[in-house]
Length: 185
Image 1 (spheres, rainbow, N blue to C red):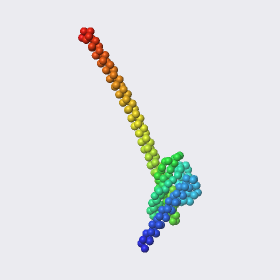
Image 2: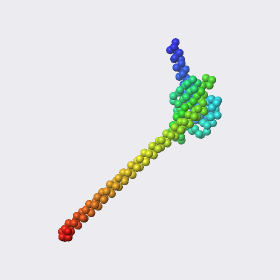
Image 3: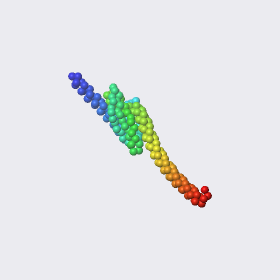
Image 4: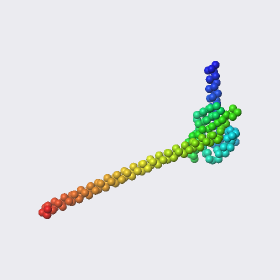
């Protein structure tokens, strides 16, 4: 009997997770397609006003992916990745937050927007970090190349100086030998 109860509980939880994920995916699909009428049907009444921020081009994702679903009582959080930017390559991690209202999952747009802001800040920081790493690598390569050039130039200069000193030494020795032969020394 206990085993049957646990099995039913697991099925209900699994079904609840699937329902929450489905609502989140339907919501984001409606937003991506700019179908705000459909999106309105999937959000909580209290967060309806925040939908206007998603209908403008302020949040311009090309596509989304959903991941893990966490449910605590009447609150579900669906891990969501928004692929933003012109090419859809910038990943913005977020959480689609849903509340169970009258036994139906609805998106809490306000909380979801809050997670998008946090995710966007994280994505911006990551892009700045990547840019800085690339810049540092570029500067490092350029400095290394310049140091190699300076080293070669210094080496060439030292060889030329050594050659000139040897030439002067040779001339000095020859003039010393000539003076010795002349008897002037």
